[in-house]
Length: 84
Image (tube, rainbow, N blue to C red; front, side, top):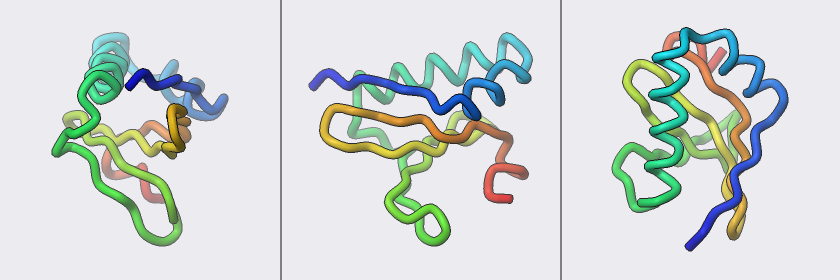
């Protein structure tokens, strides 16, 4: 199944603040998930992120929402700061 990936403007801003090697690794991780959505790096989140999923990429986390063929990336941050 082909997914369309959309980035929230806030997520793009967070991604641009990261070092280039880390940002590249995160983008590769997102592409890997899109090509193989049955990954064990995914976890469905509870309150306050009801309906969201977390993708783990090293020490970084990507919070996203998934509906049909759309993946909306809403937040990208280090694991210590993602849930604040």
